[in-house]
Amino acid sequence: METGRVIKIISNQYEVLDLSGRRNLCVAMGKLRKGMSPVVGDMVEFERFADQNGIQRILPRRNELRRPAVANVDQAVIIMSCKDPDFSSALVDRLIFLICYAGIKPALCVTKADLISDDDPIYEQIEDYRKSGYDVYMSGKNFEQEELKAMFADKISVLTGQSGAGKSSLINRLEPSFTLQTQEISKALGRGKHTTRHCELHPVCGGWIADTPGFSSLDFSGMDVSRLAESIPDFKEYLGTCRFRNCIHINEPDCAIQEGVRMKTISAIRYAHYKEIAAMIQAEKPKY
Ligand SMILES: Nc1nc2c(ncn2[C@@H]2O[C@H](COP(=O)(O)OP(=O)(O)OP(=O)(O)O)[C@@H](O)[C@H]2O)c(=O)[nH]1
Ligand SMILES: [Mg+2]
Ligand SMILES: [Zn+2]
Image (cartoon, rainbow, N blue to C red; front, side, top):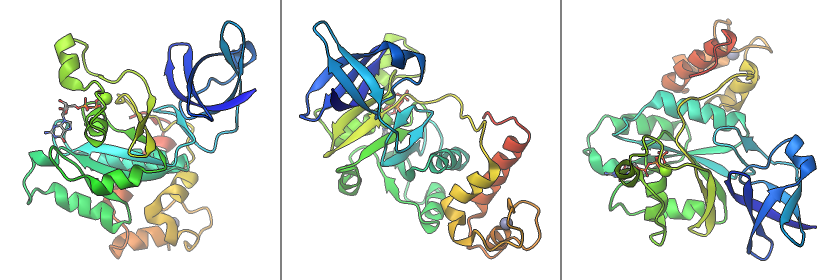
């Protein structure tokens, strides 16, 4: 049995990178097919047979995101464009919540900054993320990207963001030898909205980056509101200091989080988005 990492899935074929860095095409063996399927990022055990390679076992996952389906990542980078599609802090925050809930570190990369002026109001929203402790990177055509490149080294990262935000373009820009398909090309082919069709790990900037298809909906079903509040980085240092132990920071008296928002030490924007999602979860309408 050999160990390797799933770096690409196309229909029922898995590309597994073995310990010597070679790529092996594998199929999932019978006992696996019945249970959980491997996702990109999974560490698996596979066996070489005469006619094919077969994945026998998925090793325990350190973490996993459901959408995009990827496991064992060091960080998730939210790709949000300034324009086309428009910047949305509601969407950024929803992604932050999903990523942090999965126990993964988020970062924000704002793309297409070449399309806005230096005094665009988007910069105030970006400042709000920086003040709250998030790492924010600016990107655009002809931008210097040294800092961004450095943050991918030696890590497995997943890029997530809506279709057209510039995920594939960013990878192409960081590693000019890459020519991942981007929107203009697919429009020419009449393929419609989503350009990237599958999730794949690419060797970029000394690390591995998963390019993923943009999503059309986000799913908060099955989430627990208290666990969500506990996973939001903005709230971390205030947790455990509310009057009620089971406080979910919405209407309770003597709530440290609500007090933080009043004192402007917690972002009012993030808190408002938290309340929206908490209400959606409680109303059991957790799809956005
Ligand atoms: N001006 C400008 N345009 C950009 C930039 N990044 C991407 N674009 C354009 O935005 C469009 C969409 O880019 P993609 O890289 O295909 O977007 P994506 O996030 O991979 O989209 P999906 O694969 O559908 O999820 C393309 O036409 C790119 O040329 C940028 O930094 N500046
Ligand atoms: Mg793409
Ligand atoms: Zn509270």
